[in-house]
Length: 501
Ligand SMILES: [Fe+2]
Image (cartoon, rainbow, N blue to C red; front, side, top):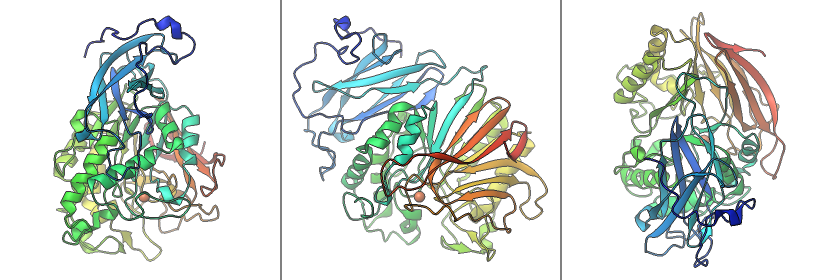
């Protein structure tokens, strides 16, 4: 879309320096403050991004409509080149409608690459918080990228101090690798709303709203664009009821999944290309960060074969059946094609479940991760080796512990490192960790680091190397703990595997 003329920047100088009054001619506030869920941006491209907000003056209303009336509400938006909104470069308005729970998604394009921007909304006479975002750098350039990634933020398990500390790092980009919400009840450090397992569209909307009302989570959204993929808990643990013949509490797993996917889209800064269609939502996608990095974001939940041997730790021969798939064949082809294009120095695969082989002490494998779908993993690894890509890093969540490991050509032979895996611990899931719990068993020699504390991973990526810091907080049962780096690594471009800094 071309940059639009500023239609409501009237008397803007009156607000100069205050950062508040550039939206002029504001009508008197006619309703309660609607921006209780904050604002967000995501999906950065070289010329744009997505802006998001949802109007919800009473976010926990059980009907899932956030205290909004039936009628559509006009939401104005602004994008500025400065945090005081004195240089507004794009603006417009959209209609927030009840069918979408008064959420709005605005897709910007036509902006210059590699720049910071600030954005905000106005509705019902109220002005939202301002968010900071950015466009990706242009192809042909490779400026350093500070990127944080996180996963697994079960609300009852603890406070979102990790999100707060992420905001304070002012990253260029944040990846979220799944389990953004949890579907269960629970009241440990704090209580889920509703207090039972959620199954309906109204339930999922309320649950997302509860998470989004958290000020620490809002802070992380307000500081940088996010790129998200889900894991299982955005719908249900391990999609278990799909396997158990639709005996979900909702009575129909597919209806439940459709409700969960719809609420997910309504609450995330995703493009219209990701709008759900019934029980399906196309979440796997590629984002380019100049000539520095390509993000291949995977969906390892929606298309996988049923878990042949259940989802526990097993030594199950069916896991080696080549017809079994974690990605589905279409997503696998798409990934192999994208890796083969070698669009940038680094290929970063953002996904959910443990990628490297990880054996238990008894020699069993987790059937929920890639170990349960070995031929699928082998085909992907073989493809990036065949295309000569020596700077592939897999970014993972799910397991509620930090892990770092080398990806091996052959996990039995342990002869050749062909990539690197960085696994982020949880934001809060599992509650306070245990710093003495450091499980690097000799049965997994390619796995170099493990720590059971909450936190996130920071990466600073350059054309020659990626610097990795595993960031931890000691407790999430109390607010406002400090963050520290527990372990650091370097990954050299062209020389896969972990190196000590
Ligand atoms: Fe999780």
